[in-house]
Length: 224
Image 1 (tube, one colour):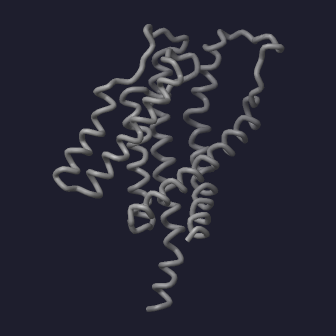
Image 2 (image 1 turned 45 degrees about the vertical axis):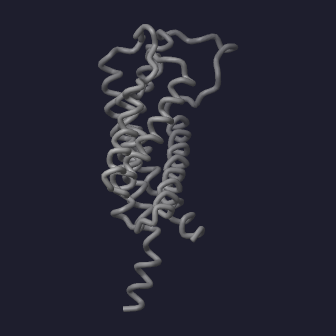
Image 3 (image 1 turned 180 degrees about the horizontal axis):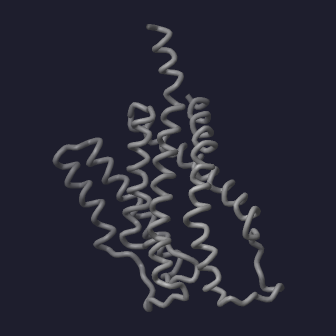
């Protein structure tokens, strides 16, 4: 079982990862680079104060791609582990469905309170945002599980309450919404980020489910 999980997760990382990295290269990455010019005001910081970062171009693309492959590998492990614990059938279709649900929990629901942000955007204290994001993702995931997997009257009511609760509490926001980044650029980035996030979870789930199910499909064909 562990070998199948590892192979499926690795395949998802090696297939979905580069595909998502390529999508990022033409959608979110150019917007981040453009926003960074507003963040520094077009001026170069003194070399002594400058922190290391990959150079724009091939170096930045390489590090971003490696990071994305690692992220999709982690996504696949999370999805496969969750499906196994839930006793769900694992194949490409269910992997896709669980991937969409994971996007709803970790991307769509938190974005209702905290939209994806560019460098230089106004934001509340980092710890408070991370705490709210994590709480929202966990509450939404639990709520969706109760709605879609348990589906009793009580479970549906509890699931809806969990999904709504973080938004009634409210996400942390800065006292003043000041930003060096144009609002049009921020809006474009928020939309593009959600699309990339959705593709990442969905493609990862579908590939991981497909690869995980292959030994079973092969055994069924041989038995027939």
